[in-house]
Image (cartoon, rainbow, N blue to C red; front, side):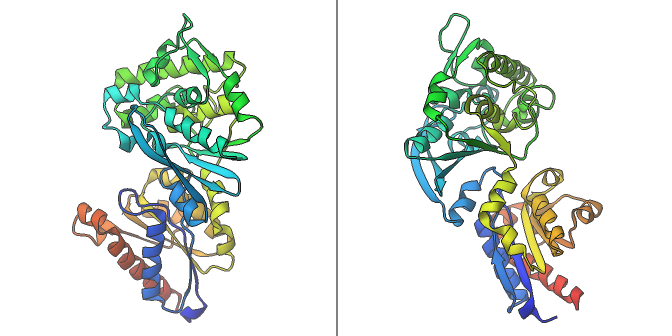
Length: 380
């Protein structure tokens, strides 16, 4: 095969804890060039709206705005959002990410989204004509109450006194006043970028599914689920849509629900929205080979995550698909159903998981070269 005529598109998500999507794409590109020195190689790092989204946007030319905001447990944190063509992209986790806390039963109840509201408010004050809120990776389960309060909403108990911040405090919510938020937002449209379909409450809701990851035990999960139900009722009484069962409203500990009800947000596929910005669709035109990947390729990867989105696009363009990951936990049958022609894991080359994490760039380059070389030889 004449590798000078081979078009390779590299479109990975982040390798969490090791490499950003941009860094992963660069490492894979080096490996591809090791195997096919004359190939045309295009890098299009992608994201699905979760952690790492801003890195991908910055690579696409966005301007990153940095500021200090109130973190999930009140301590100030360094946060940022991205501006591109008049649209502000706010990643919830930059203000209230799980990395800002040591998860416990106490933090599961206390963590809030006030800082997310500060980021949105700053973007509005600086002329954003559209807002895109990406959700996921938060420490909070407060239904976006802190975010709306930071934008001027009144969140009150039965006596009319303000309730505290955090999902646990919502157990006492009775009313919410959204007028100040609506006035501040004006006609600015809001998109909620997520590929999670969980509702706000119930067995598949924010507290039940994601609460344990944030330190919640069975008691806290039950308390938070009830509190989120009360929050949804208060929002609905204020004239907002009933967000209790809306698909995707449970994303980010329910911050998506707060955005839908309080900001008029519309849920959009995080991957599809960001893929349009990164130019991956245009790059796939005429591609012979597409390489994607992420930290762990598992069951969750099949549900709206970046690798699944890239796999679908590669199939539409008739390109072969290879996948690289820190760990590959899908069966050969699942990989075949995804359209994967070959897959490799960093842990298969590394001496340990710690080695795979610490030296991810080196292992990713080597595995990319091996996988690409095998693919190329199979085409001859």
